[in-house]
Length: 489
Image: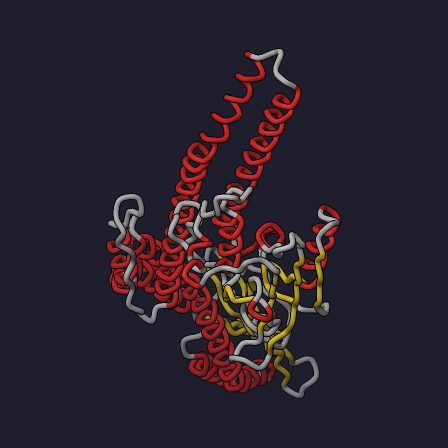
């Protein structure tokens, strides 16, 4: 059922009820006004009738029949259209419409009361009549019939019912017309949205404000819903692409070490009397192959996590504490290396802590592996500082220096490509790719420079300092580091 029809039915049902309720109140007010008018009329008429009644009682007490008849005519004339009943020492006289004589009348109350007789209703006023003579007193009743007033009330009641019956269809029709006009923007919105199918079409809702709050709010809600659907659909597609890339990269890169391990296993199985030195070399090759497989899977998983991480995983991270922990772990696992760290605490960035730690670990491992000096000595220097002078946004600058042969300028873009590594590198060629991915994920700036004094390599990364009074920039919408081999970061 359409909204306009529902509104018409509701209005068509409610309006007559309101009319009847208002009419019931109106009938009560009209009846009260008619009663008050009749009571005032009785009170006004009582003054003139009481004077004629006193004259009639005096004439009756003087035993003057002709004067008594004249006074009685005067009494009846003064009463006009109301009924009167006068009771005195010599009997009762009555004239005009009034209750049956057998009906018990109320004693003098000083104000009109209601009297019922044979299905009729009267307003009765009792007036004591005194003449100033001893023993010559009486009681005067004045009666006003309620039939005329009841007829008027019934007429008002009938008109109220007539108005209620007429108001039902008229109000329903008017409400339907108004509701149809008011809901027209909603119908237009429904027509525009009925053809939208996010599964089959890229078309989205175009809405022009109608100045109708409910319609504009509903359109905004639909647009927000569709935008979130598109975002989630894109993230789902990226997740599927990441999963496919993970499987493809793993199957491609694991083939060679697995075949090498299979060859070594075949040698150990076929030659039981293998020379101990050759056996030890074969087992060592197996260990290196196993380590490479494990490292490759760990790197691929880290890349996949970086491509799929959401903005709600980000929080304030003290980069100095994180770097200090990474340096401490490197010193423990490589006690022969000289690892220096310099940085003040409190350098906070808005970031993903697992990703930042992975970035630091891979930077340090890369510098330790490829940054040895000519005499084989490994020295890595890590520094953190705040840069509040350059540019408009304050940054935290991380530098990692080594004493190795350095990176030629023409190769400083390619070292971050996936699976790019030197021939003598023991790694999987994904460490610097992970570094570039995290730099991009944290909206940072990465540069490869010459080391201090022109010796070695310096990796410099500038992170925006977390600003508590500013809205943090979200993660990049599209991330394809695992699937795109040409990405640098």
